[in-house]
Figure 1: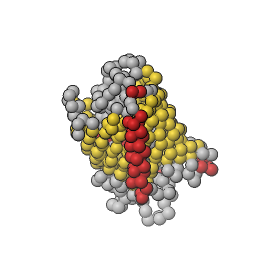
Figure 2: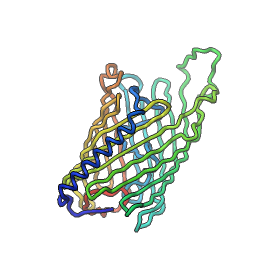
Figure 3: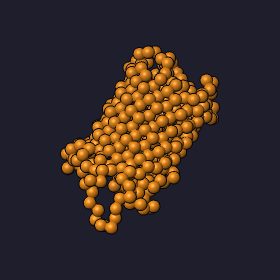
Figure 4: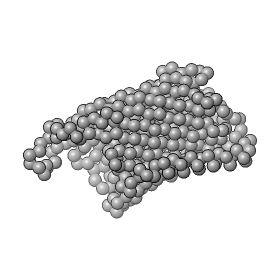
Length: 347
């Protein structure tokens, strides 16, 4: 990765090119997704507003995109408590570098992702666990990094049938819980455009095998494939301030979710063992909600908080109250950061 001792020495010409690159990249990303965006946003699987706090949810190929030997995180979401029994989701991740070349930084990484989701008076929910194996390879003059990943997991969904009344008296529940295997795969690309700008793009597919989740013994009730796209950039246009636009898209059996926004990050202290950065941003979930995100990075820790305002058709019933999220990440890394224009996610 290219680094510089003082980003303020960059020329105005470089800054203009960087700005145009960010704008064109994210306009293109939005136009690519537009044909798939529906006015009714929904999904069968879980989701979070703080995309970077649970990167493995969007793409298994992001396992390993961090500084240091390992990364561990947990994120919790509580949604629609003012309307009914709240939707509660918790996710935890653990990642570890298996082998990585000190010179090229090519290598392998393993990841573990676990989640639990509960909602409603039926206590309907799901529990999932996945193991991920990813490989990194530098290409094109070491300014590009490509990652590919495979994922194998197991899930269980179920509910409490005490409050259920079936309209068809001939139907009956064969089971109250469904246990099923899942398969996934992803690819990610990191590009260091120049000393002031990087971009990160990825695509993945989950539930490749479309497992059976029927409770009535039907073979046509399956967990459909979920397709994900994600893009993030960072432009350090000032010595201690960066802009970080982001966009993420999910599509699953006719339903879609598009989130987009931008964070501002302040690098307050980049000295070894005293690293401190603050970030704040706004995020929109198309046709559904708007969120504000806050984060503090201190040495090897990241503490983040997000709040959603409900803008959907439930806004009147919920009094616009949506959801809040809280997340913590710990990176197992030596305190040997050196001042540079942009922090590399791998080195």
